[in-house]
Length: 219
Length: 201
Image (cartoon, rainbow over all chains, first blue to last red; front, side, top):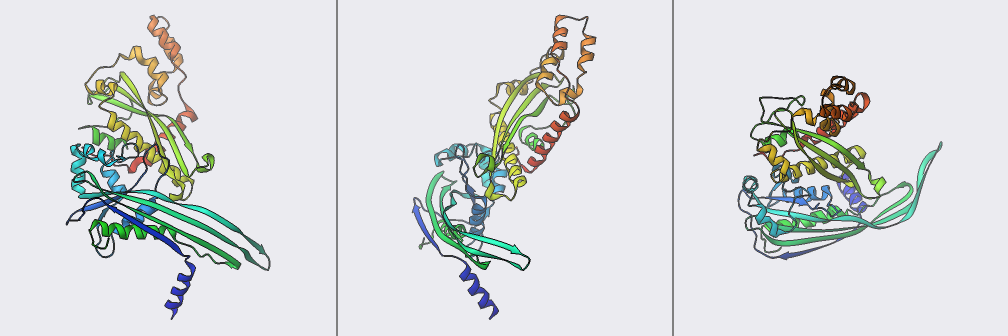
């Protein structure tokens, strides 16, 4: 009974999120025993934008767990092992730069050691698009309390580009968009009702990526 | 960071305590941080902690004669949303800048003319000619080993024009608080970059 009550309250406190997933497949994919993938956030120069580290980590974590879990090499391990070829200054921007990069024997050997079959580049970010309302709190000897109402809207837009390291070609693209409005009414106690926009975009992206890489018929 | 760079770039390397002639090595490389700037998100009204660094790599032969120098600009940034507090954000940006410098060094080492001459075993100009130049360029190791300006002037008063030039150009040694600050800054940045693992040969 206690569990159901907690579940109801938790569900109630999360705001609604709308998410959209789109996929473009350019080539067949498949994962063999011993193959790994790596998820890397885009941070090339001179662009000033970077994908959030926690989003990249979230997608990697989701790919590595559950049914049909994939072998995922962490972004930091991959960058350290392939240093200096995937630093912001040196990372390939287009897939046609990859074959030339793999001509470096040391790098090709290192990718082979790690078993990297697919490189997944993540691009995009979550932004707050609007906010309104006000909330005031006060403290007095008799007690403390808040009163007011806040609302804000977040928008997450990410795109994953998947490169095949064997033939140096793009195998597909997946985009994940999500938006949601969060609320915080306060009558004495503030009650945050948070729309987990980024988390939703991450889960949708990881689920779609897994299906795409395993070449599931449903993806 | 430099240990890992040494492992990745050279078949053998050793770390010297100070710049001095040594028969046990083929050549000497002295890195210095010449300039460092940082910016907080609230200063730039952006989401990023940013660090700019300028490294200077001085190439010496094994008799500690300068062959030439190579300046490397480096840049690193870290999103404030990924880190809690200024310390963590700045540390991440500094590590990123150090990685950038080492990436630049590793990739351009073979094409850099002075590095090529150094690796080919070229000898530097004898110390008597370069002493003043070295001291003027460097704010760290050379100043600790140099004689004070007054001593140099006394010893070279009756010497040739070259020696006279040396006495005139030797600046005041970097001592006390400034020297300590320079060393602390270098140590801090090097410690922050200790997690970097360059691609080993």
